[in-house]
Image (cartoon, rainbow, N blue to C red; front, side, top):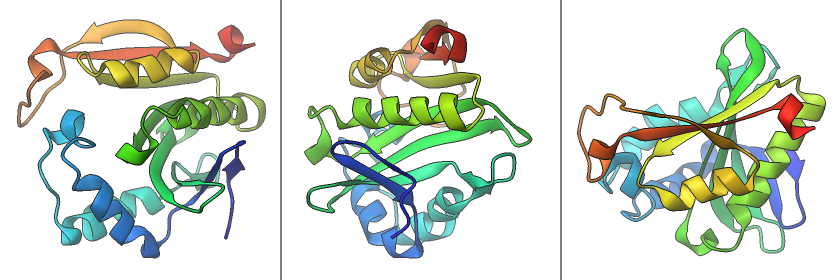
Length: 183
């Protein structure tokens, strides 16, 4: 197994075609998807044909993936994924941080642990100058992970929600962390 990054309790690795069933389970948990699409289920075909190719994509500006499957190191259990991808196809200066973990991983500090490790990797080895992350204003758990990972509130904005979900009327928030502030 290729390993991109390890922490005390986590292994982040590139996605493979074999991850489809784990992704189907993750994206079909209404609580996991509450702040993404209101908890609506996704078909296996949609995940295999639309979501997985996005997760398998390499970014030419740094010759690496932007999405990483995350497993619990002790058990090998699939926990979800982290996003750490360049915002601009041609530059690794600014990356977007994201995460989607299954409920078994909630409240255990895994999201913060993985986010901090990715931020450290980005600032020390990948040439990242700025990390950005956003979520719905009402997603307090995700906002807390951003804050515990060192990001600070930047702005509140209203996004374009093609299918409004509960809480989307309150808009979204963006957080950031620069290399200078991190050092």
